[in-house]
Amino acid sequence: MGLVTSHWASIVAGAWGRWGLAGEAVFESMSLLIRKAQRTGNDGVERSDEREIKLGFHLGAFYTRSVCACFFSLPQMLAPACSVGPRAPTMIWIVALSVIFAAHADPDYCYNEPDCDPYAWGDLFPSCHPLLEEPHSPINLDHQVARDASLGSLHLEGFDVTQTGYWTLVNDGHSVALRFGSGMSVSGGGLSDVYHTVQLHFHWGGVASNGSEHTVERRRYPMEMHIVNMKAVHPNLTAALDDPTGLAVLGFFIDVVYADHVQFGHISQKLSSVAYKGQTAKVKPFPLMSLLPKHNMSQYYRYYGSLTTPPCSRAVVWTLYEVPIYISWSQLAQFTSQIFSTEEDAQQVTPLQNNFRHVHPTFSRVVAASRDARLLAGSSGARPGSAAAPHVLLLQVALLGSVVSGL
Ligand SMILES: [Zn+2]
Image (cartoon, rainbow, N blue to C red; front, side, top):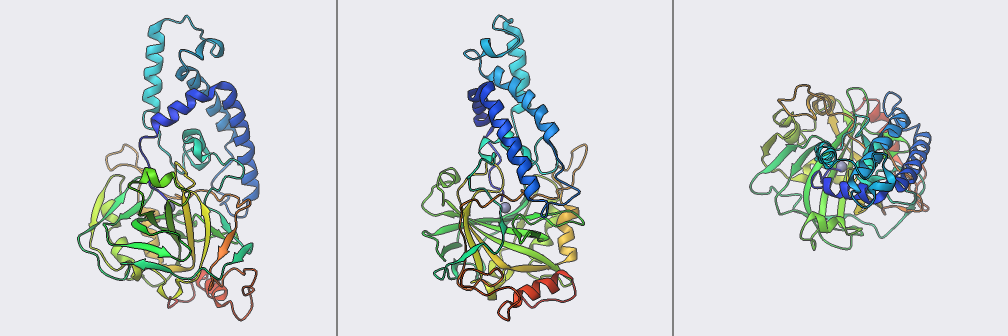
């Protein structure tokens, strides 16, 4: 999910200064080990043509950042740590600091460049470091889920009516988001509070590769849609991100069939207006429920995790619905080939593709299956292949592109 892109430069700069060289070295070594372990563990998930080993790069980044740490530590930490020494002329430091501030004034994350892709986010945003036992997202869903019979359908207030005013579709360079006004909220289904619905956005792959964030039994869907909701008691996003359950995100897998999803066209038909970063378009509101698999909304999985974009705050109650939204190949292609992560007047335009974060271990977290969830067998649920698991067959058939589901 993508929410926060600004004001982190000062925080990161401060963190650099505080760590110092020793802390950096330990942190980086730990990070490298974790990254390597994650790649090994996710071979079945990650595409072979992407997410290549970047250990060499990160060693280079370590050197660069260590030098930065020295500069930011002026004057207290400078003398013992840096080879330049404490008596360097003042002008040198002024120039050096100017260069560094210029270089780091707007640290931004990306998905496909080695110096800012998801494996490097921790270098820019410390809370994105995949430290052991930290509940990061996304995750892989498998049969290690626990049935929770108390998890019924969520109450989706305002989702089945047409809201007034206009919604705003925006390309923020990391995704395409549809920002809502007031009037919609979610509650129930095990949520302890009411959450106001703020926006939805998408994650996708490339022209010939899938791009959902969460995976199901190591399989990645073509796309994933996140409906972001903020706990109503919080006055702003900053406060919500400090609360382990400050956000409730509804995640929907998106699969592909031959027929258009008519209501999805409200969004896909506007994509050409937001092809480049920073562009926005007005969208006439429509009942949001018309996008969703409305007959299967009681079938979902629940776990506690993080934002999947920087600053990777551990503040999200995740609800992942097991029945996908089905769109057409051409609707999918509008995302994978017609959206750019760069501005319209950029010297080199870059397609926005593969905007998903790699999966993270669940560690000791429990992933709960709702009362009606059927795709993955819980402790008391149906087993795959049994007569009670029709969606397994349905999904397999749909993936072959040989049937149009009525869902
Ligand atoms: Zn997302």
